Image (cartoon, rainbow, N blue to C red; front, side, top):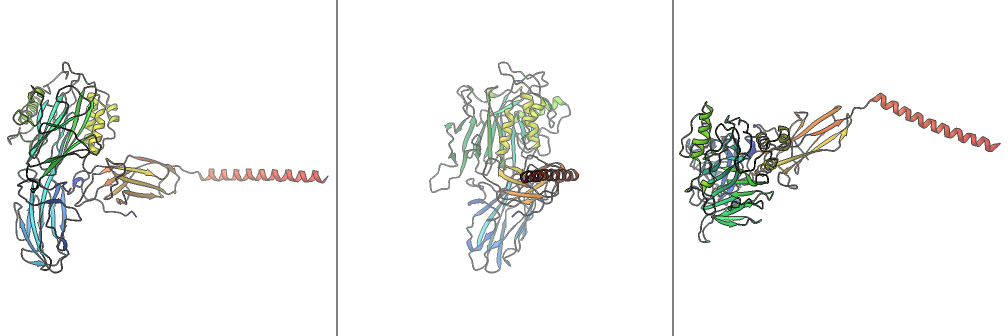
Length: 602
């Protein structure tokens, strides 16, 4: 049965989208400060059980700015519980309290004293990035009851983020700033401890100069992502077009440490060390995305790189969307912006406040900033054909300053299309910012394929969902019961239903009651109160909060339902006419029968 669930008291699309997403892998880097084997913890396994303690440590992740209010309970205690607490968090440590990345961890009793089994550890606060970047802190609890063996667990708190680049590179930094970066060359997109992602951007020839980017205020020529490379532990992974330079629509090439690899359904494991079988081998992994078209790199620290490729026949080029999820990396083109309008430079300094003069602003973005993060032959992760290098793909004058056109000699020219065409192509892109970027890309280049890559990239986001809404009848009359059923699915599946969270039904732009909890992936709303006219109904999926696997919000397409008014006078008039017609037929039949009877008697 469906039941109501409380309204979510958080801003939609920000906090609860990734509230305490568990990591796919723990912090597994060899020689890391934590030690041990880590698991991503959920509502079912975050508590300590004295009766079946495995002493495994737990790694949690949340996004900066996310409100946190969680508890950890001790289960299976046969007597009072003795607590021991060791905190490695940087400040505020007392016998019972520590601060972890903006979250206060409250222990129920000082070390060495006892409490009843029902007292929890409370974690409450507003997660924040650490001073040196998006990082992790930990604390360790040891509990026992004098009957069962003691249980010890380290809880690692990680603040993670998401960044990426779409289409004509529209960058989203890990702290959520959106800006256009149209340079041509190879750049460090994002780097952090044990991780680095580099991207190659290639200029696109077109007649007109593109519209002004709202954030930078600069109108410019455009470029595309055409290749990506990454450092995964000790390995170097590249996803590139055929390095011969000959256009090849058959697919991208994947190399690990320069060796060409075939990506089968089993994926490619990336061992972090060449060590004896008796030692733990920590692995990253390369896999196909759920749609079997994208390519994903899973890093050992839980970071996920998702590449969504497509072939542009008119340009004879592969182009990519590049998204990075659940990462603590914070430097690069997609890095944190801190107090300035752009991310920090590679040496830690900044370009300073946004210049008022547009020429100076161009110099800040496309000279100082771009050159700071350009890949060199010494630090490039890409693979090159003989006789080529990073310089082969670099055009330091692109995008042109104050251009009159964006034509490139010898290159096919992209032609723009009307705004209405672009809007129609991009109408199914869910995120408002992505939809605007999609419209920009299609309008400026005339390539409708951008809309498909935007949709696919959204669907490949971890936890992406899609919501469907149907009514049990196409139309009704006043007072008739109408039932609307919403079904929430994983975005990349036609059968996998989402079973946690609820659905808010919206009638003509206003919420109807409280959200309805999902029951086997469905939520139902029935009503007798629809008045005459046409109504618009939408179902909005609201993910649940807390630890464990989380999903992203989604909304159904709008469903129109028409209620047809009935005219009572006309209805009864028709009824009377029908009765009169039946009576006339019966009277005529009886009259004819009587006439026949008289004739027969004569």
